[in-house]
Image (cartoon, rainbow, N blue to C red; front, side, top):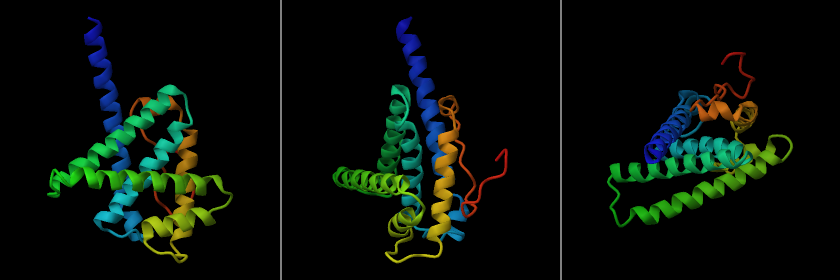
Amino acid sequence: MLNLFRSLKRAKSRETIERLYGAIVAQSRRAEFYTDFGVPDTLEGRFEMVVLHTVLVCHRLKGGDDTARAMSQEIFDAFAADMDSTMRELGVGDLTVPKKMKKIGAAFYGRAAAYDTALAAPGNALLAQALARNILGTDEASPRAEPFAAYVRAAVERLEATPFETFARGELLLPPPEHGHAPEAGQ
């Protein structure tokens, strides 16, 4: 009976993580990022958006208790499984996938460090630079990077205000990508 309970609990946890990761991917695919913020609508641009949103959610959860930190790890694991599956669907060979996954892991942790550092700094200048470099593909200041940074700050604030119980239900509340303007109540 105890094994049945554990199986049900694991299935519920897996369903929650799938819903959260699905919401991350859905947010990352919103057209406004590609039309308004200038994110390249390429495989790399889409990858960077999934990384960004995964980092933001994990950033929020890793500051919580053991359960929240475990959920952060499970979301990262879902990201890694998605990247592995996507590469295989794109025809990357079985022998090459582990090498590419190592690069993806390094890219993820490099981005996470850059975004964490930028989010800890006052203002949006460092964050705009990180977004321009990592996502917009430019080392120069981009006129779209500052509003993009404002959106990321709004997303972080929304995630910080979200109680863990909301995540535990598989719900992810992120603002619309409206150049960082505060979302209307109820959005």
